[in-house]
Image (cartoon, rainbow, N blue to C red):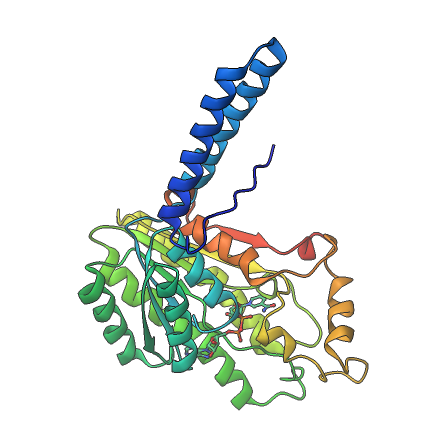
Length: 321
Ligand SMILES: NC(=O)c1ccc[n+]([C@@H]2O[C@H](COP(=O)([O-])OP(=O)(O)OC[C@H]3O[C@@H](n4cnc5c(N)ncnc54)[C@H](O)[C@@H]3O)[C@@H](O)[C@H]2O)c1
């Protein structure tokens, strides 16, 4: 049974919404219990009571209350959505991006909704900047529990092994893999006392190859997959309570994806691209950023406390065929 709540105007904060839902359910149950005159009506009340329990546990699920997270590439797409969902779950978020304005925009949205966030300029390939970002998180919010290594660049148009240049290769490897190494290194240093969760955004392209994405993108995302496992094993072996996992999105309709329009002669519009990609996702739709953000929130929360060195594949069946 699904209950839809219409919140009073201006209710944006998650806490207020939660309290409103609990109050509404309690009121409904009391009213119904008063007027119940038959076994059928009492049965309905029981269903509603169970529904309320579902609402409670559903709301408690994936809570990231009191956690402090850094999300790189948080100004757009998957990073933006992940920052917002983490904040909705109660986390304080440091949103970073090479596009400073975009990061600021995400942090503003979070704050307007009653969440806690700051934004920072960060080029993830700059080792020195990592120290400053981590220091900002700990000085503003007191600790660091979660790092989402999300920033990345696409490989579409970077040709094949015969056509691509070493320059293309280095550029993609630097952003998509070297930077994840830098982020993991810094996060382990900071988290090894209290523990934490490192979430590295890889791709289905880190599991299978594809014509058209170029060698560096496949190699960089495959590298993220194994780097995550290596760091997970290192942390577990030394008794650090740091979990490290990778996420493997299928094709997600974000600015990165849309930039692939025009890369092949037959893909001249967004609709062409969408139709071509749809054929590769048995679930019958393309992913949206929130599909991946929900995985991020799950890996950040204690609901995934037995997961480390794992691959969370969220791909609409892309790798199943
Ligand atoms: N969109 C997809 O279909 C898809 C599929 C699988 C994996 N991914 C991965 O998900 C992640 C996010 O992708 P998206 O689709 O949301 O892309 P996007 O282009 O919408 O967002 C990427 C963000 O990263 C930022 N960024 C780029 N280089 C940076 C750098 N050097 N330092 C800091 N920030 C930088 C960009 O400014 C941008 O805000 C990437 O790692 C991508 O490879 C995306």
